[in-house]
Length: 181
Ligand SMILES: [Zn+2]
Image (cartoon, rainbow, N blue to C red; front, side, top):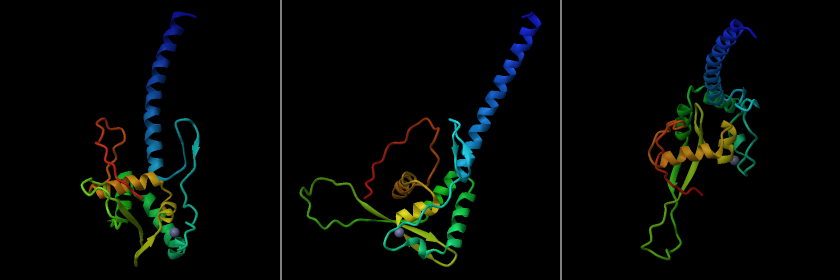
């Protein structure tokens, strides 16, 4: 290998690294956006993650999906993924959740011992005309979201906090334990 060739090789590898870094940033942005938008994407492992679609009906005795016409459900689903950021989506979800403390009827064994408060949550769908109460399974299925996400949003609701994307931040938030039945 001659000297001039080596020079060319090192220049191109430098170029490659620069380009590689740009690609990493680009890919990260692309994945993040696709996840928010519920679109199909290739993850870091190179696996294809399919686009989000509405899940199955809940199967509870109220048959919640039948309370909301299909075109309305589709519209709500579309509007949800049209929101630009994860925070906006979480705030939207938060606005659909009501909560109230559970009243305990059983006598306390130890009245002095502080017990964590328990809450029940109600999940709603808001259409142009009305607010419709649905079960949690239907709520998750309609938005194609995880139970963990709803729990996070609900925890913040109890704390009176607005959802804020904490991923990638250095200082960890003090953990708050909330019991959800
Ligand atoms: Zn249901």
